Length: 87
Image (cartoon, rainbow, N blue to C red; front, side):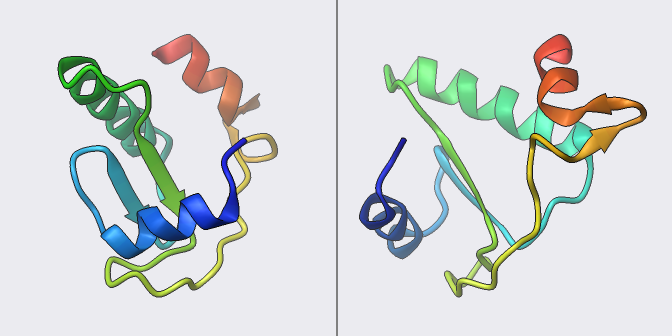
């Protein structure tokens, strides 16, 4: 698990190829595409991680979000498991 300080440093640095700031969750397919693109970029740059941070505007304002990958469903399936099957 990453620290709050680390997350705040990512937010302060803004969006880039390995950090995506999202105000709220919109669609499972969009999330899957973002994860896939970020994973490819991380591998190409020999980085272990990319970060999608929900509850933050593009300008870096922390707005909060109710998004929870473990309770959000796609059809009848929990999003975390749906993504695992799709990726």
